[in-house]
Amino acid sequence: MPLIVLGSCNKKKLKEMVALLGDLGLDLTDLTPYPDAPEVAETADTFLGNATLKATQLAPALNAWVIGEDSGLCVPALGGAPGVLSARFAGTQGDDQANNDKLLTEMAKLTGDQRAAYYVSTAVLADPTGKAIAQVEGRCHGLIVSERRGTGGFGYDPLFLVPEYGKTFGELPPEVKQQMSHRAKAFEQLRPIIERAVLGRAGT
Image (tube, rainbow, N blue to C red):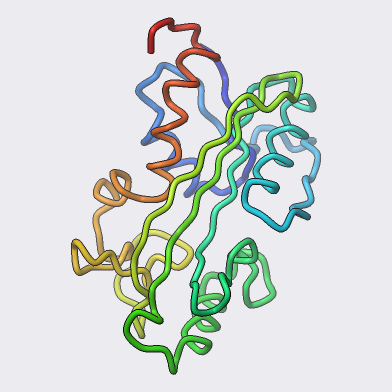
């Protein structure tokens, strides 16, 4: 069973990847089984740049297919922030509580269309030599509500309202989010590429 490693230790991202790609007959894992994997500094100023760094540096080190994924929330009224700094918007990596608090504070005086936002997921697939063979991007558009709603998901999900449903990602069931999220849209584009390049299935 071909192995693909997600270049992250984020269990919630891994869970979403397994839900999106798990039916392809792959061995999917994150970096947890690789304690000696190099620490990749996310020094790029774009999602694509950071995803490429993760994929191309980790793949040869692990001698495995690697998906480097970088994602975040962009608010046009804030000049695109939090952007690539989404996970450390308030200063500490992965502090969802503080990041959400800072976003609410910075958007406190914004109304209507000024509260528009979109999630971005950029994924890069690298072969075991470190060559990037595919790059994809998915986006999901919504609005930022003025207080947390729901306890599902992670990151900014309790604040991200999906207009079609009138609910935040924090309120929507995981199976609904997985059908329409930024990550779902990115990985949907990656599926046929993985089938051809990793699984050798022609005509997909």
